[in-house]
Length: 75
Image (cartoon, rainbow, N blue to C red; front, side):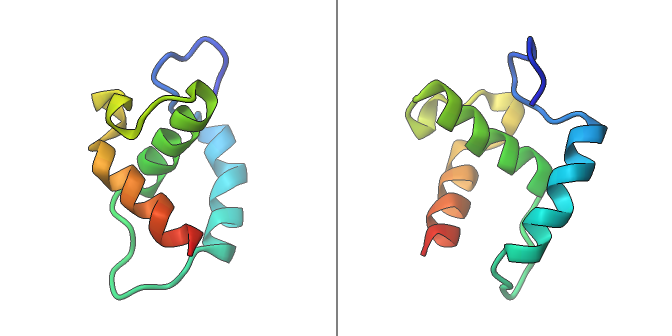
């Protein structure tokens, strides 16, 4: 995420670095994650801010999607 970006979205250049790494290790499920870039940005935002899941900004998608993905992948 870029400094000064309050929503925590990734630039195209940053995502180009992260995406192959995430795809390499992400668990394979029945369906691929919806809007993975935005969901990962939400997880990073929460980690950097120490906030609760429900505090994730709406621009980063539904808070429950980020929480669900984080919990599922942490197993």
